[in-house]
Image (cartoon, rainbow, N blue to C red):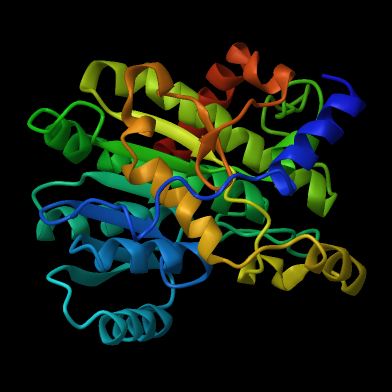
Length: 326
């Protein structure tokens, strides 16, 4: 895919966007279904939590800040007083790998099923040199390793749920981005030739875009390793260009140009809702595929889509980096 094709796809995903395919108006009743939304108290994660709760789902709002989580839960409950759903806060710090097992165990002590895990949380373009608790580049740790490990811990309950649920209804979804189109070439994820680890570019946007391409690759690799056997659907999505807290680290100039292109955050919620709940996203022919705004299937950049070897290598890197916390 050349520069012109990349520009064309970016324009298509930014401006030529059909109306949302699934909204609160046509979302089926979610009674009895259990969802986890990481980062579910802010941005499009919060919008997804609202959409699910108003249709009677059990929603675990997962994140670092209990205060923010409980405030969002109270706000959502007040907005939809007639809901028969349940909202719970789940402590989760994706930037602190040893703590993730406890978060997953806390959930599994409270619930017997998990229908959808939405890996929504992430960080975007923090200052160069930002690190996780274990010393990983912050975006690598929060956007790749944390969701990988959390999903791994929750896979047994997802498998159990899928064994007694309608085909295609149990899902794991992963946050990619329009930035995937601008991820490093070739393949979206570059490995350091000396260490074999995912390369740190020391450029905020390059490192961010790489993590988003990584999630698209992990979605497909998870589908191949776990989903096909267990009947779990795994898809990555570009939520769309949205005004959200993710942009808090942008420079003035970056924020100026972003503002001209962004959409209300609810539309990102619709994208994630499509991935989580639409009948179309649960079809056999769509497993492992890539979802764009506001709920439609779009193409990945061709070298990313073709990077099966890189997806396998990325998975193995994630396994190696998180092994001691398993």
